Length: 226
Image 1 (cartoon, rainbow, N blue to C red):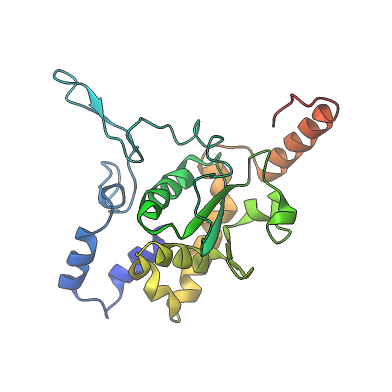
Image 2 (image 1 turned 180 degrees about the vertical axis):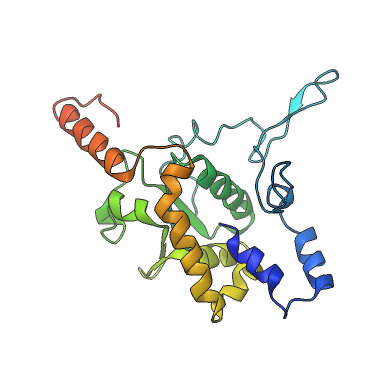
């Protein structure tokens, strides 16, 4: 959710020179221009083959091995490598390709900070009772994060807290102030409402119905997986 950055760029209080310095420190996937858009914050696919006629290799954004954000989500569902002394827990939809790009970027940053615990709400092992009672339907509606003291934060505040936890607080800093805060939350609300359609997935009602049917079929089968 990069709308706050666009708002920051348009604000008269941000000098052009300072903005250039800020943009230069952004992760490459946030600043790469898309051929079909003038926006500088539209991410490109994370893994692109380079130099097809020469040595073959991939851009590896996460680790020393090539990772597909969608297929690898189940492996990271409980994020066993998350630090015990985390400061904020991110509840994310591991079946959302665009969401996973941001999750992967934060996870990479978190290697140096150890402040975020990541939980995939689409995993069989996600338990609402262990996460302030936040069930799948609730968290699918908009982003939720849980602070170490149990406080639940949502919407742009959740993004701001997550980015602050990995040293990128300046990205969303402007959203602390009005009227930017209200505008940013409104824009995010529109994105959250139509996120599934935008990413080519069924409506939330259809997703929930499919999960209910699957749960009924799996009641008597220990080997059944969602």
